Length: 285
Image (cartoon, rainbow, N blue to C red; front, side):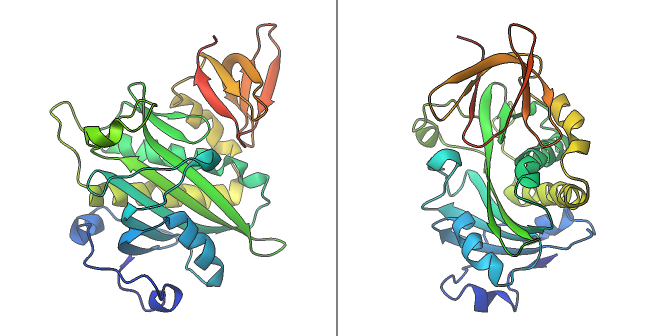
C-alpha cells in the first residue's frame, strides 16, 4: 500500500494540495494485507467530488484501484443526479479507479459486487445487521447507511474505466440526518460508539479489491447467490419506480447473471429489471 505522498500524483492533481492526512495511516496499514493489485491511497481535506476528479484524471494514467478519500465533499453526488451530503467528521467518502476489459453491459453488476464487498467487510468488523438493497445501497435496521455510485468512461474499444464512489455514514450528527426525508443510519453501536474511519477503510479495500479482480475475470454471475443472502428485501414484496413514473410490483426472488432484479408478479410470472434509473421501494401499495 502506498499512502500519500506518491510521486505520480502531483502531476495528475496540480490543483489539489493535500494537507496533513486526516486518517490514521498506522491504523489503516494494520488492516491491510497483500493484494494482487496494490492500490495507492491519496487523502485530501476537501474536494468538490471525488468521483468527478477521478473521471477527469483516471484516463490520464492513474494506477489500478487508486483510491481518493476526502474528509469533506462540497458537491458529492449519488444516483439520478441526487446530492450526497457528507459530514467532515461523521462520514467516510471515497472513490476507486478501476479498469476492466469488459463491455458496459457486463459492468451493470459492478455496483452489486461493491455492495457485497462492503457488507462482508462490515460484517467482519462485527456490524452484522448491515444488509444490501438493490441496486446500490447498504441498509442497517431499516435505514440507509451507505450509497454507491459507479460512473464509467470508455478508454478503448476493449477497456472501460470505472469510478466507484462510496459514501458511508460512520457517525452522522442529527443536523445532517434531519436534512434527508429518507431515514438514515450509521455505524455506531448500541452505546453510541463509532468505529475509527481508517481501519474501516482498510477493511473495505481489503475485501473489495479481491472481489473486483474476480469480477473482472468472471463477471457478476458467481456473486448472485451470495448477494441474495444479504439482501434486505429477499422474498419480500417490492415496488420498482421507473423514470416514466410507471411501477413494477412483485416478490423479489433473485438476480440475473448481469445483476438484474428478478420479480415474481402476482400472476406468478418472472420479470428481470435492470438498474439504470430504477428506484426500489419496500412493499406494494
